[in-house]
Image (cartoon, rainbow, N blue to C red; front, side):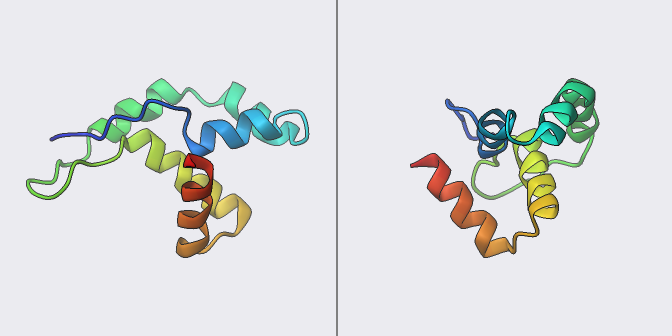
Length: 86
């Protein structure tokens, strides 16, 4: 399975680092969660056989967490990701 190359911090990483001082909860979550262990679990999911290259699973997982925590709809999450990438 091909994965997209992401050469800059993710929206999730940027939001956590930008709001880390203003939002100690996100900073603390970043300290407490073993992201390498989460990534190992995510690697165990089945691989799609077709389609465009996927975004890294950990990046998508973090985006979904932020979507839940901030009450974003799918279009709002997409807009936030697009805005952050530009």
